[in-house]
Length: 304
Image 1: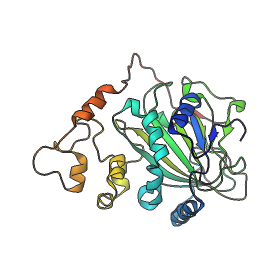
Image 2 (image 1 turned 120 degrees about the vertical axis):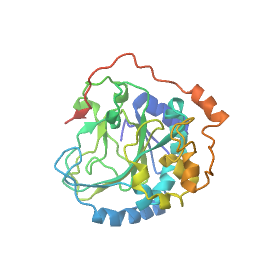
Image 3 (image 1 turned 60 degrees about the horizontal axis):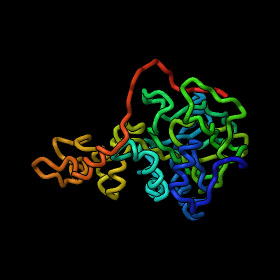
């Protein structure tokens, strides 16, 4: 793991955010207790058993099992989603560009032996914004097993979040995010990355929880991923992260009512509060994008 931006669990969110700004990522070691790792694995197990292997497309992998809706299927992921270090880091990375950020994607990725390396890509390819650009998404990959060179630790290209579209990495620019089970890889969505090849005799399992600017379309539709009746039983901070909130003043309202009030049956009959003074002040303080030109630029897909 020589040369990787790897830190102990007591690191500050400022240090993590600085590493992400400079290198595109940070690895924080041993964040989870062994008992939590074991409990998480137990929650993943029945869904992994039921999941089919992927398809021949090298992006998804024909020896990889995937499933989403983790906030419902694996309730422990709610604790990972709201881990203080992660949210404080998201405040620093995404916060300057939005009033609220949100869950963008949840998914388990279970690479079985014989899986080949995934097509390298940027998570932000959905959005028609050229690179380099301010952060649109922030990803976490929690290691449910050890991530090693042999079993397919995520391949990353440090610094590639600062590259223009079209630049491709050389072999020497690619490193693998080795980490112990219970550690977490945190990276900006414009970092070029991809799953590694599993040349070992055992699986490599990770839990991906991604965040995005609140005014962007979510990759995983949280309103359909979890039944509304179940969402009503969740803590309000989880509800709001899922998108049952205003992204800013008026944005995301329902019939002139606050979406969280509508969700929880507290909206009443008249118009609701669609943005406080504090929210408007926060809106006026965000850094706004300036688009000066456009061009046809395809998504980053790199076979290495």
